[in-house]
Length: 132
Length: 132
Image 1 (cartoon, chains in turn purple, orange):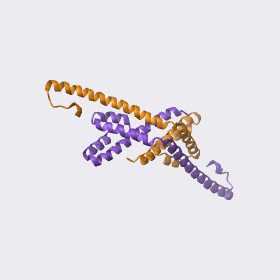
Image 2: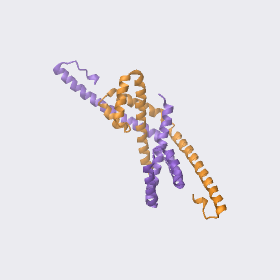
Image 3: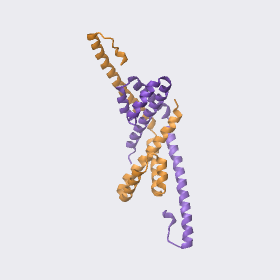
Image 4: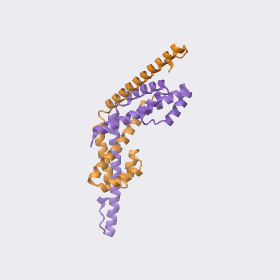
């Protein structure tokens, strides 16, 4: 496995995601304060790939420098607010979800095992409940 | 702003992403150890939405329980390996990228400002370099 490469890729995914969330926040704010600009930004984001945060910002630079400054500021704020507890949140989330999936797996195995043993008792076939 | 909701959404995005990376790792491993199963898993991931990690795992449960167990284990390992330094990595990444974007903005402003002042000198028009 190559955790270093995966760590870098994960950081990039989060950076893009926080950029997207920053734009959403600004859209919400503009809807209240400057509906015309909100419509413009909504159209701009719909026609440009916001999943690539850095290229999105670079493109917007030629259109509206003030909006770019605002996105930079908001995503920096978001990173400072949400990242601190992210390691615990993600580890906990995966651990909980894994536990639930394992419980379901066990339930399926138990079910198919009891079905197999019933059919095995009645038909005496060579089915192996552990192979399911 | 609503950082709590964004923190939860971000954690979900990371959980999905680490599940995707776990599947990629297992695909790489299977290509070496069990090419037939690697082909099967590649086809399965191509025809099922892997971006929704939990539903992907639930779907796979009906097909191959052993593979599901493996994905759970690998994504748990990945979370324990890559999340620790994620807050610093993301904050640093955003800070660096912001610095670069601000540098570019300044460069554009300086350029357009000097163009404006040149044209203003020669034509004596009313362009305002600070409005760009």
